[in-house]
Length: 144
Image (cartoon, rainbow, N blue to C red; front, side, top):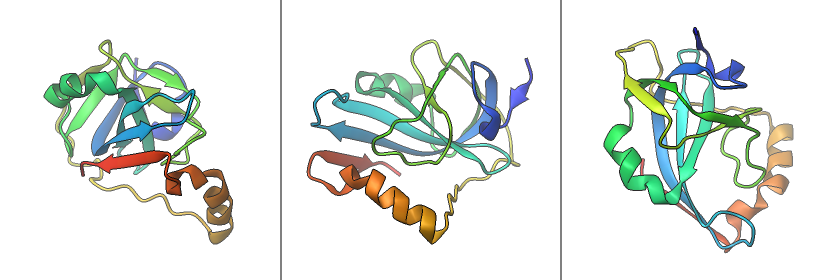
């Protein structure tokens, strides 16, 4: 199975990524998970994708995933992105659990930052969609 770039991820495949950010998403909204461990990944083309795990797996993933490190990732589940607190405009997002494998790789060609530029018109539409980010129901704790 060949490695895919982030923008083409649609199903279970292996991807070469750098871990850019990590945070805990906490919600008090009924029907939404209370705590999620969230990551932002980027590939060699600079494309980003969000990955989430259950909040009770923080300690497990802290042992195997390091910020700014590069990995070949397999064993994730590809799903539609969350419609609340979306951080990256991508048609898919990843769910990682204990079956996900993160094999460290050396890769100087994967950027260590991610930019998700949008036009003002697109930004105006996102402000309305993501208004929960500014409400009192949700708290984002950013680690880096």
